[in-house]
Each structure stands twice: as C-alpha cells, then as structure tokens.
Length: 250
Image (cartoon, rainbow, N blue to C red; front, top):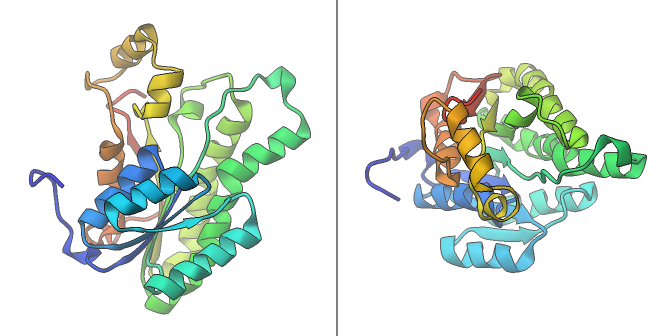
C-alpha cells in the first residue's frame, strides 16, 4: 500500500468478510484490507480468479454462489470457524448486465434480485449476531449511480440497487443500539477490466469525464479506500449514510 494513503490501526486483526472479492472492485477491497493487517475472507463463485486473489493477498477464499442462501450461510459460518467473529462485512457482489425492459421475464427478474439485492440482506443477517456479541461492527452495502442518473437499459439492476438504500437505512436503525453501523457506498463509473472490455468506448469515456467535476477516471482503489474508512473506528459515529465516489458526476 502506498505510504501516501492512510493506515487504520483499528483494522489490525479485525475480521473482514467481502463478497464478490475475486475481481474488480472486490479484489481491490480484499487487497486493501489485507494490507491494513486485517484478517480477510471473501466469497465468490469465480474459483480460478478467487484462488489467484487469495494467493496474492493471503486472504481466505471460500467459493460460494451467493444466490444460494443455505450455501451463503454455511460460508459465513466457515469464516467464523476459520478466522473468528466477523466485525466488518462488505456487500460488494453484483452484476450490471444490460437488458431491455421488453425482454424481461419473471425468472430473469428474480435472478437479478438474487444477484444484486437479496444476498446483501442475508449476508447482513448472518453476520449481525456476531457483531452484536462484539457490541460493534460495520456493514458496507453497495449501491450504484445508475438509478440516480436515470440510466436505462437494465431495469432489474437499477431497481435492485435503488432498494439497497432502503435496506441499509432500515438495518442501521435496527442494529444501531448494538453498536453496528450500516452505510452505502455508491461507485461512479469505475474502470475495472470488465468495464474496459465491455463498455468503455472513447466516446462513452469522454462523455463521462465531461460530466464529472474532477476530470480523471476512477479505479477500484478509489472505492476501496472509502470502504476502509467506513470499516475503521475513524467513522465510529457514521451510520445510515450514503457516500458517492464518482468524481462529482452526479
């Protein structure tokens, strides 16, 4: 980790669970927590990529399809058995596949909710008792600027991501008396390998930069550093809030 960025003593040896940690923003989050001295585990269904991240960071990789709630619960229990009670959960996993409203069938809608919303609740439900025992914890949910910008072309995704805010604020109220904080990080257009391959045409990139106040592309570490702060004791009185990291694009 660059010495120009903050170190958080409160994250040393803290047990952190990251969903979707095998690539993109999630992999950067795993790397940043490991560099802080945290005990990190992550869940993902992409096994080769996950094992590569684990080898690189020393984090514990547990293969898991988060759409399978019994498997999710078993994986969280395995994290506790291996590392101890979780005190930080980063609900990062999602997929922003494009889809037209005309073609959506109920089965696809339900699968998108399972992929982008449902697991965020069930992961929080699984770790919350551990945080209650410790009388402290931080749950970081992931939203999206897509619905804030009224972006079309993926209605199931934007619906799921908008719902994350209601979930996080409600749980902040329920869990606050136990010292557990719940916040939402909203990434702007983050230039992961997937984004570069699928959608980052020169015209689209320039249009996005024109919209931003800060004229530079955003990358996964820009999100990871916000997550570190929300996980640390430096933000101990911050809950039920939304943090947009988009270069001032909204």
